[in-house]
Amino acid sequence: MRGLVVLMSLACLASTQHQALIDYLERRLLAIEDRIALWHEQTTRYASELRELKQQMVSQLENLDKEKETLRVNLDSVGTRVDRVERELDYLETQNGVQPCVDVDDKLIEQQVTLVKEKQKSKYFKLSDCSDMISSIKAMKILKRAGGQQGMWTKDTSGGSGKVYIFNGTHEDTVHVFSSVQDFARSLGLSVSQQIKLPSAWRGTGHVVYNNHAYYISQAEEMTVTKYDLRNTSVADSSVFPVQDHLPVYPLNPETVMDLAVDEEGLWAIYATRQTDKYISLAKMEASGLEIVQTWDTNCPRENAEAAFVICGTLYVVYNTKHPGRSRVQCVYDVNGLVTNEEAPLVYFPKRYGSHSGLKYNPQEQLLYAWDDGYQILYKLAMKKKLEV
Image 1: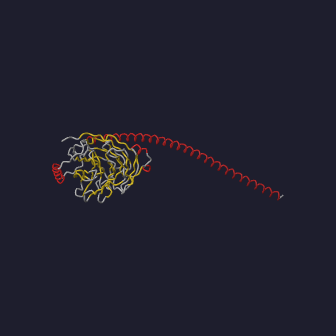
Image 2 (image 1 turned 60 degrees about the horizontal axis):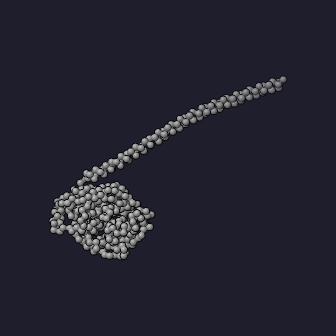
Image 3 (image 1 turned 120 degrees about the vertical axis):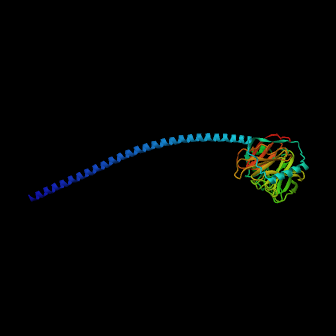
């Protein structure tokens, strides 16, 4: 009997423990279900927030695209207006230019008086009846880009065969030749040109081609002018320019110690010396024997000078800045006294790449052959008659 009571007690205890375990498991399952429900709720909320954030980002990106397009349109409009302002400035500069860059002092006045007296004693004998002067730059054409940053290109200024001569660099001895401007424009570069090797290297960019001869500075120290026959490929003549203590003629292109030029009246030399170090000097040369016919100390300053050329006996000096900007003719000097700075128009070149290392006038075509930062450019000149005095 006692054993039966013990067994019943054990059974009751086991049943109680089993019920307690079931209750515990049920509570745990309920807690897990509550957590799952909470996670599901939080996941749904996060997904909703992410969708809202995506919608906001899409909306903001659309607004940014619209603002970008608006900004692009505004920039295009500003660019158009800037171009218009530049054209208007070009017009105003040609109509009402700044005063020529002339430093008038007592020394210069005395120099001018001396020059006038010298002119009265020795009048320059013109070789032609040319009386043209520059009115403006009528048009420009960028032909191509060939060669280095500095150089010079030209045609034979006496007419001739129409060949194009390329002097690439400031210290080379190989001239590149093309049969015509069109042939040069269509070419793939200087490597396909006919090449003429000179007996000595040139200095600077102050060379010219005239009457089938190349005239170039072969020695910078003594300013030796060499005349080279392009047909016979031989040196026809050479001469030391009779000037002591010479200086680079253009401070913005110091490699050019002297600049040779050709106009309707023949061969000229543009140079500078320490005796008149602030101003540029000009000389008329005989193309046949390289003799000096006459010299002039001009009133054109060397400071910020970039290049120069001669047309009908008038020197045109082109100025720029150390940081390349607008090249402009700001000083003229007429050896016959028919043109003064006050009467000459202030000519601006179109703003392009850098600065001119070479400007060569062709009197047959009334074109300037320009070398600007490796680009070969043609400037068509509009001319007018000089005022007779």
